[in-house]
Length: 301
Image (cartoon, rainbow, N blue to C red; front, side):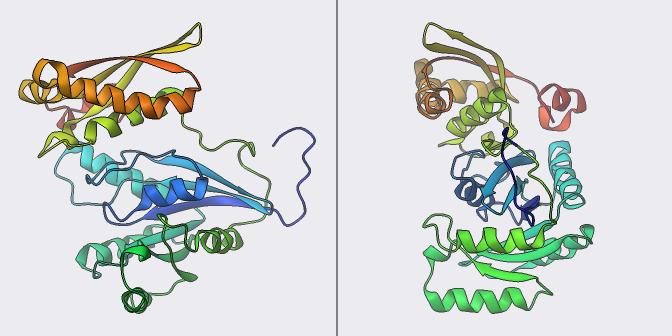
């Protein structure tokens, strides 16, 4: 709350989380609602690795949107911890937005996730049919019927984050379902992520672009230092992989791939920090870190 700001009686604030299978558009939807990229996006599954909060402010209320990893059948200790993040988030939020893409039939994964909504007994439930820009209108109607047959919902809303369709409707519905109360974050805030966390994620997003086979799951990024000097932000970061062979792929011939990653990451980081950026990237190996509790701890999981 900024000084001198008075909130009308009836102001509402609370937590909304999106759940769904990997790659149903949860991060893209959160970014669209916030109006700024606070969660990275990629076609690769398990791009989101922790609960990331984006803050949506409207005259009558504030929604804190919690983006979570996609629920999946875990094959590593990291996978188990990602599922734990979802379970913990579900137990704490006011509203759950259950996301199903318009183009894909409801399957066992969706039914499994729907059953997990019982982990959030106090939360209101909104069913969200995503990516409606990608299919004909009659297909959207069929998906809305299929979703309604899954169970009881407080609201069912078709949206397109890409084209901005029905996003205000989603925010308005969610605000009606959260309790009355003051803003939970300052109204100028868009996220509670630290600058270092946002930079690390933007580097990882750039590294994910074009990564093949098992490499996306093996990538992690840590920021060692951020220095501001004479109108330039100097950033030193490590890109972690699990094997020497992956390190060679990540660096590329004569450093070509790592240079591409640095160029793409800088283009995203410069608007965030508001200066030119010098970015020093080093690729390091942490053997089998997805399965090693100590390595997971060092890398922030």
